[in-house]
Image (cartoon, rainbow, N blue to C red; front, side):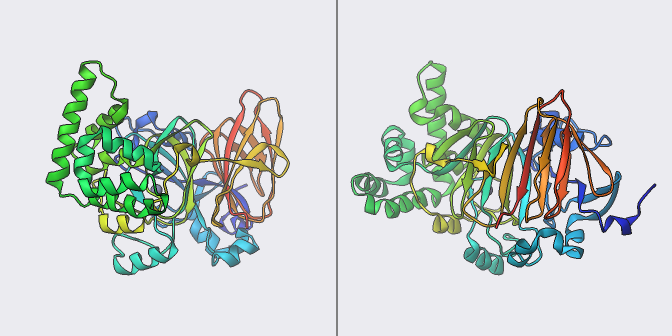
Length: 427
Ligand code: ZN
């Protein structure tokens, strides 16, 4: 029997049909994890082989509000439903976040580098949105957590000063861009750590504020030199030559190619994570990940992008904290006695991600009730469960909304292990 829209109002656990974003940097066709999940979740969807599938958005952001599927039929959007049933968020979340779902959950498939960027804190987001609403579409902060699905590479946070100083020595084109004064100031600060923030800010700003002619010329010289070294079989690791040539092939002549000498290159293995707090510079380079963030679309960019760039704001807002790449890995913790779950809980209240891996030897898995609405993504495996009104058959690509205080028992298909990610807000 078909249940109408009115009955649906009582449903508290249901499947979502989620939006994709086809940004040019996305992986193409079925090489994209985003495309695979999106198409697996609905047999009517066909992957186009030459189209970039960059992001899958699971949430209520107006640029990609999920649509509720009820018995396979599309109904309202998740945002509309939550507005009508805010109790589904859980009491604390409702109060803390003004009846809104506080997070946006995503999958990303990165083929080309994303822009060098940082996200403002709440105070700066308010100011930027008021001044330039066309570039900063909302007034919220945007802390982000990325958890790798495949080996995932990104730039994240400033390198230790000693590493940047080594590049100033080994890469004369980089030194020329920074300028002799600023370079010497940073070299001196390596011995006096109280001065390193100021010296680092000066170096980074000097480089970013160079004219297009100046940095394009230095980049051309560097690329020529590294290309010759590669052709003659020399080791180019002292200038990260391979990555430099890759970025220059993706964004020829872009100032962002030099950012590799300031920022840590971090490679995550599946399950490893990095957390990007406010004002921390970063750029994703390649791979697939699950990402969760505060519900916002505010990004300040400065290179490796055809989009609007705002060098002055970026240079001014950054934290300029230097740390080794290993410090950038975010370590998950066990989750309330569940041997299959790991908690990625960042130092902001807006979101938490739980990774759940159930081996095929376990026949049933109990998805715990939380005092928060949550969104559950099936990455791998198959399971069935009983929703409030309908049987739920879950496979790779299924996305489930679970209202606060609802639990769910999944019968796991014994031929596959199950990999799930669940975004929620644990206050
Ligand atoms: Zn970002």
